[in-house]
Length: 155
Image 1 (cartoon, one colour):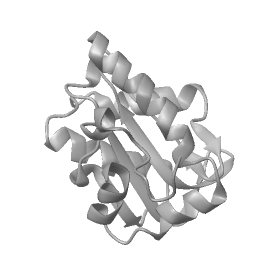
Image 2: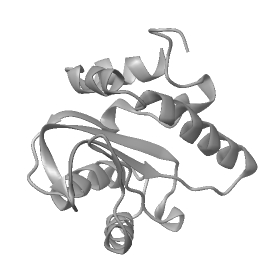
Image 3: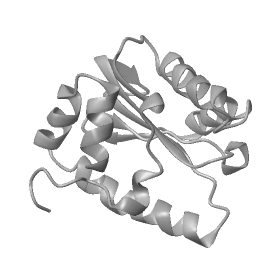
């Protein structure tokens, strides 16, 4: 992938919205982080009121940390009205189960149509290249606003 090229293909752009991107988010716990992110989605009717509970239920089963200070929590597809990805770059790392986390991608995926499933598969494939190096993670953490991060993802 060429430097400065968008991490995601146009098919995935619809998954991102500036209103679900948080930079310098100050939280003390994963619960607080996930509540803020889930509420933002719920207010825009992207997810149902059951979404946060489904995310926490999922968290109770096994950790969603994936290494390098990144967590990839998600809720039940039945609590999702429209597929979106919430992103939080935390001001300071927090303990997320047994690992320090500073970058959170909250996945709200419906998976109800073939196109949607295809888009989500593409997201995962491209997501891996977004976080596959310390350098790329530092770039994400350096973003100063939700708009700056949003543009980085889709331009």
